[in-house]
Structures are given as structure tokens and as C-alpha cells.
Image 1 (cartoon, one colour):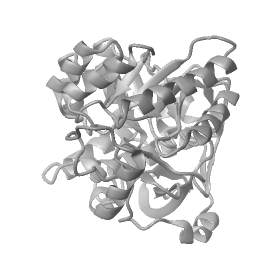
Image 2 (image 1 turned 45 degrees about the horizontal axis):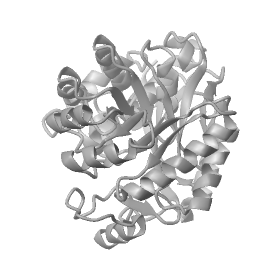
Image 3 (image 1 turned 180 degrees about the vertical axis):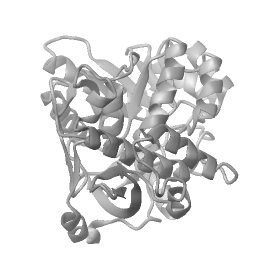
Length: 393
């Protein structure tokens, strides 16, 4: 079997409500979802959700190869891009192709990927993540009630701009999940998406911890700041979670080696091989791993096969338009199916029909860092941050 070609598509994740974080808000709730489809001469096609930036150059590293040699092909793609740097969206392209190759490998074996990778239990514990900073209280409660109805008893709230608002919203979601769990105490996390300085992080979290117990605070300072994460970890009771925006073991290693991270995260967009390697490094330091992503399907399969998986992020309860997933959510967990491969199918006609819904690639949102991030003296309204991001687009 040989790799013969690829196709690229772009669909849309339509949340039907505003979504965002401390960096900005997508007011219409629509986000572009790039897709890569890898073709073979044996009739198998694999799907990866992720960018196709510089894909012609990256694909040259695997064209004509046997797709079942996935980890060796992953390294070939890294070597192909080492001069220009395999970070950012190029690393996402490598991750999308890597995920597609794992999909093909499992399909060829006639097994779901979780089984091929050595997983025993198809259930993957989940936490709710509503990308909720742009919602008012009623909308916020309704969103987390929908998660609670699926059995979720852990939630991650977006914040970092106003300590009083964060404390209030964390209390709201605590009450929703406590009632749903018949009094059982839920797990609460706060994600600030790199918006603080070290001192701001310790002061902000310390204020919240006067009345609430946080399981973790996520990305409290810039992703590469080893000393900053150490300072935050020493100054708060909550665990420190980070890693979703780190690309490659060389970026994870300093944080892990220094003891600056308590929960090691990786994003679905970076691929399955990356996750497996980061999980192994984390396990060597007795640290748990937690996958991140809107549709982290590849990492959910991989999570079943590592000994240190903690919990996986559940964002939208519905997949992107034209994407069909072979799993469901019940009793607080993703439940993976038996379809060979990732169990992911693409409806290209539906994607083509939804092209008018795609937001402009340069439109504002959470992907644009505000000019004053980390340099604020006073609380900032999420709506004002979103407006600033839109103006910068």
C-alpha cells in the first residue's frame, strides 16, 4: 500500500452562540475547521482535522510511502521542515497528516484506532469546556446545564479579565454541577489563555481560592515561561496546566524537567504521534496528560492506550458541519465506537453546501492577542477585548 495523494477541505464549526476567551470573542460562534484527506492506492483514505499550511512541501516527505509506517513518516515530516521550523501551523499540518495516517493504519487492520493502539476501555473521561467568556449569566448556566445533562461533573471556565466575574461564574457552574451530581463536589478549572503576568496570576487565583477550590489554572502566563509557571505553581493551591500550544518535545521538556507543570496538555491539532511522545515524557515524570481540542477524536483514541491520561476536553456537543464521528457522550465520558480507524466520516457535499458560512480567515477572534494583554491595571470586560481584537484583524 502506498500514499498517492491528498485533498484539503475547510468546513465550519457553528456553535450557534458567541465563543471565545480572554483574547477575544467570535461573536457569531463560527470557526473555520480545516481538513486533510490522505489517499492510497489500496482504496483507504484517512482524515485529519487540522491546517494545510505548506502542505505541498510537507506531503513530499510521505508521498509514495507505506502509510502504516506512521511514526517513521512523522519524523520524515519533521526533518523536511527543520530549517524553517516545524512550529505553529506547519506543525499542525504535520499533525493533520499524522492523524490521517493513523486512521489509514487502523482501517487497514480492520480495527478502531483505540484498539489498535492497545486501549482496553473505550470510555474516555471528559470535562466541559464551553469557551464561554462572551455569555451572560443565563446563557452561561444553560450551556453548563447541557453538559451536566450528559453526566459531566467537571468544567473549565474561560476568564482572566475580572476576578469578581470569574469567581461569580465559577460559583454558578459549581452550583449547576453540584445539583446534577446530587451534592457531589465537582472539579472546577480556570483557563486564562496566557493573559496574565506572574504576579497577576498569583493574586488573581489567590483571590478566587479564598472561597473556591480550583483543580487547575490553565496557561496562566506565556506558554514558554518556565520560571513564570514555577512561580505561579508555588504561589497558588491549584495545579498548573499548560502545553496545548507547545509544538514538539523540545518545547515541553524544559517545563516538565523544571517541575513547572502539573497537568501536561497537548492539542488535537498537533497529531497522535506527538501526543503519544509527550504522554511518555510526562509519565516518566509521574505527570498526567490531558488532551485539548474542539474535536480531539485522534487523541481520544490515543488516550485509551496511555497509563497517565487524566481527562479530555469536551467543547461543542455537536461536530463540525459535514463531519460524522463514531462516538457519543454519556455519564461524563466520550464512548468510542467500533468503526475501523478513527470512525470519522466526511460528507463533502454538506461541506460544499456550507461554504457561505465560513468566516473570513482574517476576521477577529480569540486567535489575536490583545495589545494590552499582561499590562492591565483594572478589570476588562470581555466584550471590550473582543472589539479590540476585531479592530486589529
